[in-house]
Image (tube, rainbow, N blue to C red):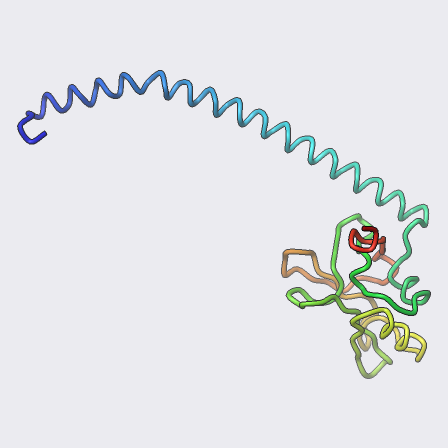
Length: 168
């Protein structure tokens, strides 16, 4: 290469660019086909998600799924992980604080707070007159999976349905 002059190197670069042009055109066409297929997959996933969410919300309205408050009042044992939890809007949530290893329910007697890691503990606290929430703030602390976003929601607005683990 060192014995080639600059004009010869520029000619060779131009020749290689000319040979690359049809390949780049084919590659652009392939990328377009790929992007069209990926767009169709996204459209189908969104439609399936929207349909699943609508079915879930319809089940909630029909009373097919209990609220967390109803579940705590009626259940004496079991894991919180036996259920999947959704807001009345259909969004999936987990109970307790983001980043916690396990789900939990917070209870209060009006002054003190306690945390239940399963339905047996929740049943004990509920039977003793404790309510879901913290002093002056009734409700269930939930967070959105994979985020640090959390909020306190009225217990009547969080629905429980048998989870994949419990159904499988």
